[in-house]
Image (tube, rainbow, N blue to C red):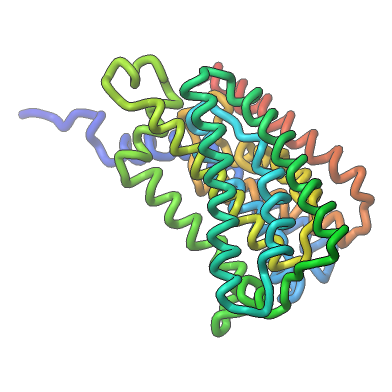
Amino acid sequence: MTSTPLSHSPTTSRSRWLKGQRDVLLIWAILVVLVIIASLASDRFLTPFNLERVTAQLTALTLVAIGQTFVLLTAGIDLSVGSVVSLVGTLMVGIITDAPESWLLGAVVALGVGALVGLVNGLAVTRLRVSPFMVTLATLSVVQGLALLVFDLQRDSASGSITRAFGEVFTGSLGPVPIPLLLIVVPLFLSALVLRQTPFGRHVYALGSNENATRLSGMATDRVKLMVYVISGVMAGFAGLYTAARTLSGNPLIGESIAFESITAVVLGGVSLMGGRGSILGTLAGVLIIGVLSNMLNLLRVPSDYQYVLRGVLLVVAVMLYARRGRLA
């Protein structure tokens, strides 16, 4: 009589799955606790108006964090996303008018600018073999300078506007569903599908886990790296388009903190800075934690200076916990 190997038993498979998802389960548990604390701290937190405002505020961060997830999974980093958001916003002021055809042109320009910056980052990392940190730090400075230059030119000429009708395209509702919620859910679903159900997604995880091994196996590692930076740039461009529509303006500094916030959210969500580990579901939890925490502090009228300090502490604690867990694993 032969017994079923333990490795194939349902209990063992379930335990293995739980072990692999422990970081995600932990971060979602923390989110639930934070929501309970926020609801007790302020009776305005769970009101429909406030929840809709939180969703609108988190849309841009979610879009950028999705692209940042792809990059961090390959053990890279993209510091230029915030400047892309700022540049796209300033460009939209000079493009979007009352003519509906300008909306399509604005979308093409926004995504094109993001893709171009991502392509430059990817080529510098793969062809020139410059570290992702240095490359994206350089492009951050260049693109931010361009955003300020465009803003100054527009201010001198006093031309361009972002119409309220265009803003409603991104901030209105589709039936009972707020459009910002759709802009969060749909990209999250598609990115999770790509990472978990496609060869490209498996290559992203493999590259982050062991680049030398994946290169020796014949995988086109440079192509995968190039693609993740383009994805990150496109998502930042999309976030810039949404931000311009939401604010009806082009602030050249509006994306100043979003790179740091996106990295914080992704790392909080369990994505390893060393690559190869993490998920979109975890990233969503990290984004929600930042959003709920910021909203709670705003409702309690905590100064923004203290909020920046707290976000920095969160990032340091998350990195320390995941680094320690990685050594113990």
